[in-house]
Length: 135
Image (cartoon, rainbow, N blue to C red; front, side, top):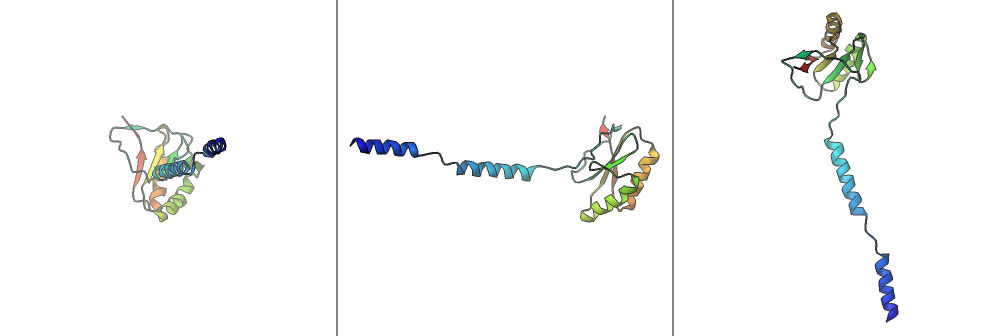
């Protein structure tokens, strides 16, 4: 009799918690967060945007171009310059038609802004907007 009791106690100590259901739940949560996350490409530079009363929020799927105070034009963290705007926008619009938003520093000359807008329109962009901050 004491051996049976001893065997039973040893069997109870050998049992462990099954971790596979816990891992399944963790992976399902991970997949959920990956799928529901919105990925927005930023220009990669900080610009001091002008303020406007008529500022509106645009959809998330836009092409963001940034113009710094030094006059550099950026897309996705890369300095593409004014000459690179047309090729970049053409390539992105070829995949999916979407508006172009220019984040421009308020100290940038209007001539440079007009050049960037012209290049985007020549690339085939139907909508070109200027990013501002709401007053």
